[in-house]
Length: 327
Image (cartoon, rainbow, N blue to C red; front, side):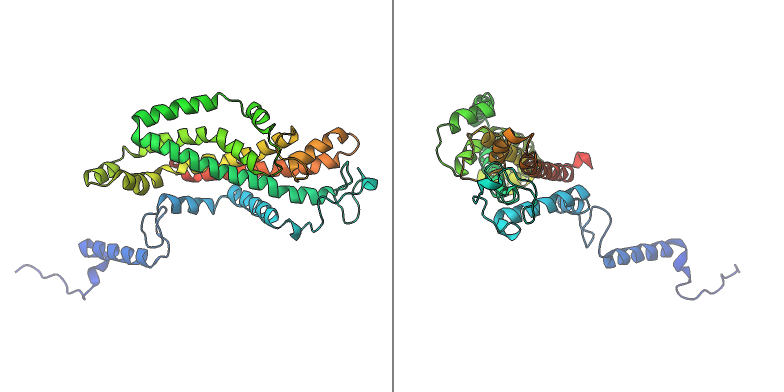
């Protein structure tokens, strides 16, 4: 008679053999279900995150995004309600105080017309931010629609768009602004916004075209087409959400460029015109006094530089979060 193995209580094999492996796997699965956050790249219940949720997960931990976002939030706030921190009137001037330095209640001093530089610098954010945001939205919308249609349908659409973008790329931006805006007498921001949209859409359209061409070759698009989905459904439900990321990145970076372009055109006298309040107008007016009263030039110039840098840094952070190759 072979010897019987000693009696073991129920559950004694939990740490060894197949039973132990199964119990360990079950224990790990239970722990994963109870953990609020799964492994890296997964959501709260261990489910894979989408591109957008994964990008937001990275952006929240990026100090560059946080710093630039706080600066932009402050700029947008004072653009909407500049009276929160500058209750004075930017058009109220006193020639007897022209080019005076910092005084009590007027920390930035006065410009050549006796206007408070601090008040004009704060109120100048409204025009610059408005031009940048509106121009970016117009360029992104027009360029995405034209580029997306050309990339999706191809053939004649693509050929026409390619020739049109070549023509617009051949127009120098500053020269085009000097020619087109020199005949405009309006003092609002809309002629400047229209000019930027007119000459800015080709860049976005080429990026959108390339993204759509890449996306429409994916298997899920071919499967949707095989199942009988219409062109509009394929374009809006399957291609557009997966091709919009490069457009967002370029548009975010371009926003700072449009703000700098508005200041340049206003400095040259063809952008915004007095009595509008703009950083470009103030920089142009303070340039002759740079040696005698540098404060009148440095404050609006510094505000412009910080604004452009903040939007460029924001665009770089968004690009790093949305581009899988940079992870």
